[in-house]
Image (cartoon, rainbow over all chains, first blue to last red; front, side):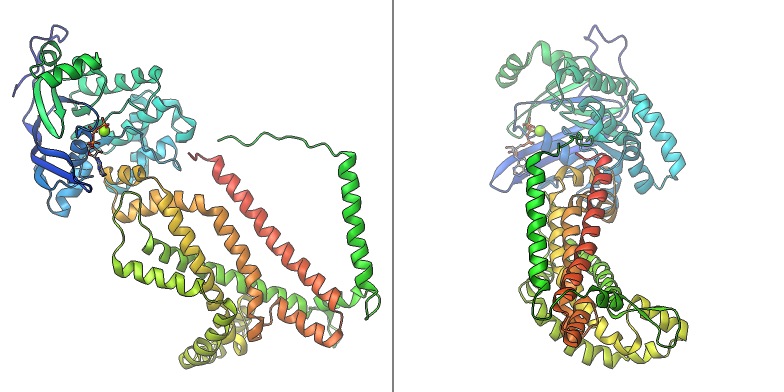
Length: 262
Length: 304
Ligand SMILES: Nc1ncnc2c1ncn2[C@@H]1O[C@H](COP(=O)(O)OP(=O)(O)OP(=O)(O)O)[C@@H](O)[C@H]1O
Ligand SMILES: [Mg+2]
């Protein structure tokens, strides 16, 4: 495991210094009803500030892995440790993992009955106990950061897909997570809106946010990713620095996957 | 979602002809009914059942029909509130959220038997059952009437205006209970369907953001579920008003009961029932319009 991001990437001006391990998964297994083995022993460790990109064919278990990391899915075996909180574990641990892990969904899942601003302030007020005015000030700043300063009063139905996803990112950031998970955040978007969302994600990465990103955007993976995990049939088949993976994938499956994606 | 575009529908000659035909039909019906055995219309008598003159020479007093209208309103209002609370509770017990686990057996059993028991029996029978068991036995044993009589005069007057005077309170309460439970069974199903219609992603987003189970339900799921249920709930409220006529069988002096009393005394059958018909129609139409308004206001805000 590289302590520092790839030095052989010429695009990267200077090597990023990573902190200690903040998210760790050990031997995750998950079998769904019907006998589908979505995860068959997945382990990974993510260092503070690292951007890990997860790629792989459809049905390889990428979403299931992310859902295990944020507590939405309970693994049959194995455990997740995020910043000292353990899953499966006590209720306090579960609540800590939920609040310290931000999740961005493929279909945004914004609350349609709330404005963009209220979407962002809801969780800080309820789960962090922030007073309304402080939550609102923070939310405005976050919405400004994702380029939606003038959309605070809009309802999700009045926003484009790209704008909705950016509100969803701001909503997750409002809980001040230690790690952000992105599950195909741009897959449901029209092509012309993918760029604006990736831009926000790049900005987050540059600011040193720890991120686990499931994506089919190979360009983003190569530029913003420190490390790439290639998943297939519920296992991590290959793990490499981003540049290395795209230049010379080791396995036959990864090579075939890449030739289809690029 | 923006409001539907306004289209002006022209009033054509065919419309005029149809309108004239309908009007003619109604007139014919009224004329036939008026020349019935009792002979001639007598609407002025009906008016006196709404407002009557004080015998002692005082001002105007509410007549027997107006009293009935008030009772119907009070009965419906109390029943609706109680039915909404009860129905929502039972509906939540039984609801299986998308992507969530099935509720525990005990919960399903309680909610299921509540709904099935009440939905599959005639409300008329329920009215008698509650009147004799709950009213005569339970409420009497609890001393409800005595408690009401012990109230100061002002309190008794308020109670009479909002519900019923002490002497009739027990019967009124069992009538409210009958209607509330009967409607609650339907409202439970409406609420359950509403909660189950909210997409799985909403629960998951709320969970991932760290909201507690109660917050997820109250702040994310229920607002959306109730919004989707407004038309069905409004329909149920309208049913409550109409079904309230059933409790006339246990001598609650509501609109229908009063009409039967007047009919027995005066033989003015057609006038009475046409008047009562119009009263119910106006009440329910008002509710119907209000719900349309509410629906439009809610969808003006963001809805997917
Ligand atoms: N709730 C579920 N119930 C049953 N099977 C499931 C469930 N969720 C996922 N699966 C199955 O588990 C396997 C892995 O699914 P997963 O969603 O993790 O794949 P993925 O890599 O995210 O795929 P995609 O790229 O299509 O999103 C698939 O075969 C899927 O059908
Ligand atoms: Mg997926």
